[in-house]
Length: 349
Ligand SMILES: *Cc1c(COP(=O)(O)O)cnc(C)c1O
Image (tube, rainbow, N blue to C red):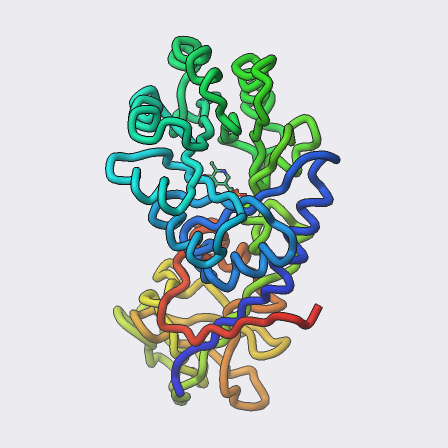
């Protein structure tokens, strides 16, 4: 079988959630962000594992994800939708008991007209300029909105992964200015904000990437391992080239392994001639371009021909691979392809 195997450690995800929960200030609820198919790792398995670990509130990006999640979790856990209440969402929000985070006066109007009395939260913009009401809009409608009883006021930090960035303190001050005295539970911190310290935690934190083993939560247990089967090996003489465009040529007689996996599987073309794969403890450089389904790797220095090579594992986590591709761990995870055989590890502690 040439299909690569992606192992996803649900025990590690649960342990990471508990670790983030312990880091959150006493009395602060720790939610779990499972948007984008739980960062590409599989919504159903991941959400069930998190619910089992104790998560009672989940965040998704869009109502459709919330509807899927409700079918997975059943009634009980709270499911919040970052994109709020869009046209066409009303039935899903109502029937599947979703909590929209309303982002604008338009959304407030839509929600109050379509579903009066239905639970909702508010997203406020404290400087990221992406989603949420800005201070003047909020001031204009705050009294009316607060009377309707929002269950959460939230905002999002733009630079939380850079602890010394002045934007953090500026957004914290703006969040206080917009919400102090409202008497409604508040949430500002995702993974990066949790690590900034308790003054960022308020009543609820919303970790995502930290659960899945990514920066900036350096203490996270690794979650993913990805092993690519070797389909074929061949000897190259000096001057022979590997792959499209002949971007690499052998400077010495070389043994090249062709492994199953490529940019169609989320292993970006930017990894060409840059990444390494691992044969157990031994790094092996990618040579030539990553193609759609295949990667060529120099294994000249190995004693034995490997049956597979690891591209994610103990020696190379999602952020290491992200560095090689000039991107971030979030993008590596959410790009992981549909072709892998997914193996979930659970119940081993
Ligand atoms: C994605 C997201 C999160 C989770 O962020 P991480 O950095 O993955 O912890 C929290 N809040 C909002 C608004 C988000 O969009």
